[in-house]
Length: 331
Image (cartoon, rainbow, N blue to C red; front, side):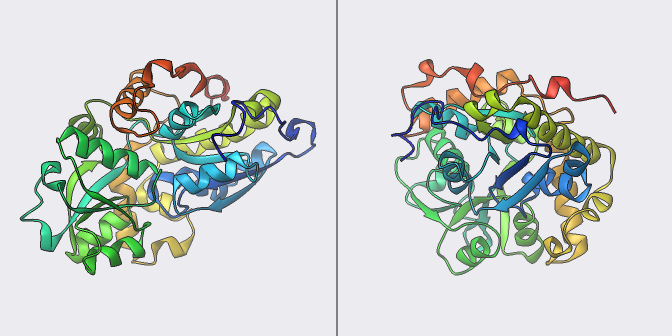
């Protein structure tokens, strides 16, 4: 379906700018994931309402599912990894990031405690079952990159989702290691069920694992929608940048207080720790790191099935824009 659609979805996009109060549906590749926290935080802070836009936040288990919703027109935006814009362009789609929430993944490759002695680096992935959220997801892309860089020829990607399904798969031996985010990371470490093998929640860890920055969490939309609805897009971006500013200027406890209480189902202290361990990954201004974007293309060109050998044909200027973050009013 995705391959068959025209490059910029010329079939037309809703004219949201004509509405007195535009309505935007945003699919989030895991509402409870700390890496996508700005979406629910913007809602909790009332920032969408302040901007005069009605935003419906809906959750999906992975970025691959979220992007399908965008491509079919069921949603107008996705909060997911930037690398999907590159992957989709390689398939003939035009999708652009309008606000870059983070320039690092915020992910970690976790290894079960039972396998911690035998899996000490990516070189040990050979022949192993490695957990990802789903095929075609960013955890899939990153796992391919880590394995490829380590010279691993064969491993089995296992779709295990996130949260409790990931934890269960690790505990029952369904996966030997896997990639996930907080608060799942914090739960595994605190319980002693898993250990951090490769940490991409910091700039240093990301550069070490991927040879540079890897812009990840973003707000992306179809190029067609952005071109037709710049006023609505600006409202959405203003709200997200407001949430990023709140993250930068407030404590983990203050941030957690604005999030749904059920996100702390493993305990308030653990949830605050997961926020504190991750909050430095977020950008303050929503701007893309240009060299980081180039590194994403470089990695996908080497290790992603869809982008392999097409890196030189990717037009980066169509995968992200700073037009809207540059116009966010100063606080």
